[in-house]
Length: 294
Image (cartoon, rainbow, N blue to C red; front, side, top):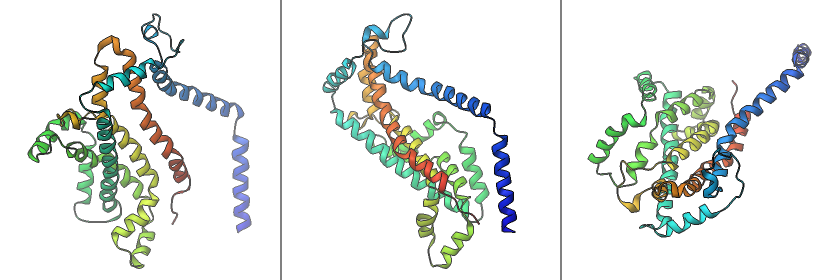
């Protein structure tokens, strides 16, 4: 029986190899190169613009590549930073602190809420998940007024909590974690319960390692969203404002600071890219090897 199954598998592999078309592979490869190049263009353009001198930023017809690269734009940012009312390090700390705490809270809250929805049965489970699904339809602009009223009632205006709390409970993160957790073997969780593990131990030691691709993906998107957050609706004190707000103040000099704006955009672009590069290998590895078969 084993030899017969092996023969069937080898025959199917040979069939797949025979059916592969070299021309089709080349066409797919070329299409991927074209799509990848198209997606890479905005990234290259952001980098190029940051190193263009003022006279090249307003050339007509415009040129994509820089002819005489310069770091004058970055030097000008440094000079303008020295003239800010609040030290630049304070703006940087605010963004880093809010992004780190908000991202960690987003992953923890979403995963802990998704675990019972995915692997436990209780009254109202379907209704709760429908509420989460409906919440995906609401944009941030629709919720802005309600969030402000809640934060004002809780006396959280001009505090870090006004930025962190609305970001830790996102329906998209909960939905993503639930979909991944549903793929975990229920028999494995039952075996862990028989071994004496409580629900939190199962969640932390079994569920979370098996949904690593999901929470790594959440980290990337949550950090990107919070890093670019200005917080202008909730923060009015200068020493609590975020880094994008400070850079926007630096750029608010009109056409004369177009180069500064390009350099500032590049600086804001770097941390999310680094976050993605750091976690990319882990995401690909866990997607390739994670998973439990009954």
